[in-house]
Length: 476
Ligand SMILES: O=C1O[C@H](COP(=O)(O)O)[C@@H](O)[C@H](O)[C@H]1O
Image (cartoon, rainbow, N blue to C red):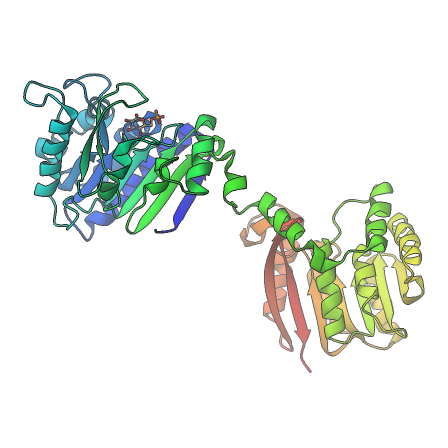
């Protein structure tokens, strides 16, 4: 089975527009290297809305429709022209609008109920013959370039319904269906064998009533319970859904995003060992109304681990806040170590001092109040022992300046870490209005022009969202 890609759109309207745009692009793309193009249409709400969006798109003229063949994945077995037929709906939504651009012979509807075709089986047999006529494929169907499938709330695709015997048909490309739980009871459908011969299968589903089926299909994948689970393409299987249809998905399939990032942080929480003292620092900061912008526990543990790895005896921190990262770092120090932490806000510094004393590292840490740039100048003038590690987590506007100032205070081989340099990805936007983003960009430009420093940036996701650290090593 191929992996399934899931693309989530805000609502059914956007979903239909996006399916149309994707379909048009795919047609133009395929036509650049293969002809004819075979597309299987679906009925259903979003399926038909997508066809209407294709008809309304100016991009439809970029497609050479004379080289496109249209097929159907299923059909309601009623007379020709009946409003319930997927074909009738597709004609109204798109095919009529294409006019002469799409030759009539390129449209391959499933035969409707008539004197000549009295049963779903007769229709299925005739359609199988038509498919085989266009097949260059051992599956006796064309290798469909795109096969669109709507999905019912019960998880049916085409007219393959849960628990129905049509699910188990082998050695045939089509099947007549009786006793469909969704009216009308008689239908014709492609079988799984035919569906799976498609290069790309796109399952489209919108609305909260589809959420359970989406979760089930992408979860345990039991085809008899949720037939949509068995709809896979030979090259790609794409689920195009709206937000409402994914309501139950998080439990079934981890969708990358903030909820999952936090869940993963939580899962690895036991490795981090945030003890009572660290929790107390966080709590004290919150009780005093400090903003909740300290590093996450796993990031604090990273700082500690790196400080130990470089054997830091002297650590400089820019931005004490409530002392949370300070405590992680201070605990990496040997008994004769020293941590100098700079904080512009005297109230924050007071909170941090109390917390750090309570955590038992008060004697190792100097919290210095004042603008960091001034304190750094003063430290430079004092010519003290150089620092082994610097953690910069202060205002982003001044990062480039802080880098220059701290470089003058560290030993060769020192590690400098800078927090929050990705800013949810905003850093790539040259014209971003946020001064903090611009501060990071100036810092990055400045860093790129410096010799004597090796550096990298690592993007991070987690309970603190999407951001990243810059890691710099001052060359020996
Ligand atoms: O019965 C059918 O329903 C499905 C899904 O329809 P929806 O309105 O719930 O989106 C459709 O894909 C299928 O072609 C049709 O015959």
